[in-house]
Every structure is written in structure tokens, then in C-alpha cells.
Amino acid sequence: MLDVHVLILGGTGEARALAADLHARPGFSVTSSLAGRVRNPALPVGEVRIGGFGGVDGLVDYLRAAGVDAVVDATHPFAATISRNAAAAARRAGVSLLMLRRPGWTAQAGDDWTRVASIGDAAALVATGPSGTVFLTTGRRDLAAFAGDAAHHYLVRTVEPPDCAVPPRMTLLLDRGPYTVDGEATLLREHAVRVLVTKDSGGPMTTAKLVAARAAGVPIVMVDRPAPPDGAELVEDVDAATAWVLARR
Ligand code: NAP
Image (cartoon, rainbow, N blue to C red; front, side, top):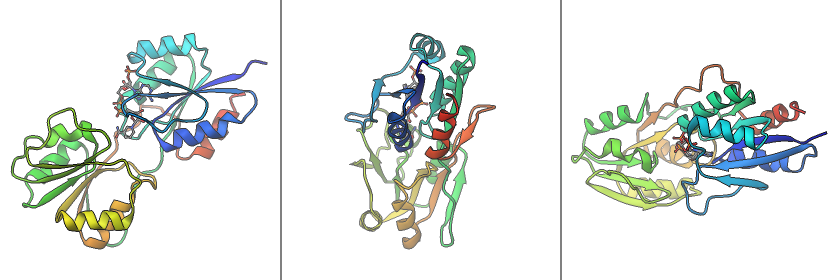
């Protein structure tokens, strides 16, 4: 019996955990795919391919040429384009698709969060807000939305240097974590942060900033996730994704 070929669309810790989990299973061959945005990315175990597919058409061609039987879209909750493309390509190629998307964060007692629907809404909100430093942890590709605001100082933390328009008054920190609550608290204090802007990425990797902001009374502008593609079959954790893959056999 031929192995079931599973394509994991990755770039997240969950995608790496799923690849590691499936790697040891007989009857499955697994390929992980990364966009190639980050230098020296954390690599999953097993077969890895790097770079875009060339839209929906390119992904359909890839699925057919590589003999992919099932796709797990384990990309970041804000990676909306690849998720949309994966849904369309899997449908067209007749390949089953699962979306693995970790749950978003939930505000706790003591939190002062304002939820907004988009990065643009977050930018409009802070640009018209009181003076003081705005801490942006939304990623370099979202910086352009804040570039028109010369009134506020921005503390910006990204993994890779920005390659688009940035706020004119900016202090840039290049860091990929992991972050600690103490470290985040120090950052908030030393830069006199007035408000933190973050995407609702969910997961445990970047919650230290939420805890530190709560303790320091710093409000958060929380950008909501894009909706998953229509009709997507969704699970929220790696174990459920593994079970789904095992059932493809
Ligand atoms: P995106 O806007 O949804 O995708 C843009 C294009 O990048 C896609 O059309 C596709 O190119 C390519 N691409 C994205 N993910 C890919 C993958 N896993 N394998 C092959 N090609 C991929 O994605 P993004 O927001 O730029 O994120 C890029 C990657 O970084 C994602 O894989 C995601 O998991 C990871 N990431 C994103 C964020 C975030 O905040 N957005 C945070 C952490 C990690 P083609 O059209 O040419 O196929």
C-alpha cells in the first residue's frame, strides 16, 4: 500500500509539532512547506520545501505533481492568503484539507483590551489617541498602516528588518523571542509604553506581553483574526490534526 502523502503548510510551532508527530508514523510521508520569509527559520523535521507555489494554480499543480493526498493548513492565523489559496486549490485538486488554527486569546480580569477588526482600524485608533509611545508587535508587513502617523512615537518589534514604509518616529527592536514577563515588563517601563498593539495570534509563545501589560495597566489594541475560508474543516490543536491525518489511511 502506498504511503499517504501529507502536505503541511507551516510557519508555526503547531506545524512543526505536527510534522514531528507524523514523522515517526508508518504509512505516511510528510512534506512541510514554508513561505521563506524568515532567514534561518526553525525547520520542521522531515522533508521541507521553501517558497511560494505561485497562487492557486501553482498550488494545484504542486498537489498533483507531488501526489499529495491531504493538506493540513497549519499556517499562522493571520496568513489569510495562503489559507484561502489552500482551500481553493484543495477543492480543485480533489484533495482533503484540514485547517489547524490555535484558539485566540481571551481577556482576563484586569485586562484593558479594545478589539478591532483590522490593522487599519488599529492604526486609526492609535493615531487619534493620546500622545505617548505605541508598542507595535504586529509584524513588519503591517507597519505601513502606521506610517502616516508622525504624531506618535512607535516602539516596533519585528523578527526581520522592515522593508516597507514605517512610522517616521520609530525605535526598532529586532528580536524573535522567546520573551519573558519580566523582560516585557522592563520594555514597557523603559520605553514608557502607553498602548500595545498586537494581533490575536493566540498560543503560548507570545503571551508574556499580555501578562506584563495587564500588570502595568497598559491598554491593548487587539486585532481580530481574519475569518477562515468558507466551509473550512477546523481543529484547534495538534492532537486533533494528527487524528485527522491518521484517519486518511
Ligand atoms: P500570506 O499573506 O497568507 O501568504 C502570502 C503568500 O506567501 C502566499 O500567497 C504564498 O505564495 C506564500 N506562502 C505563505 N505561506 C506559505 C507556506 N507555508 N508555504 C509556501 N508558501 C507560502 O502569508 P503571510 O502572512 O505572509 O505569512 C507567511 C508565512 O509566515 C506563513 O506560512 C505563516 O504561517 C508564517 N507566519 C505569518 C505570520 C503573520 O502574522 N502573518 C506570523 C508568523 C508566521 P504563493 O501565492 O506564491 O503560493
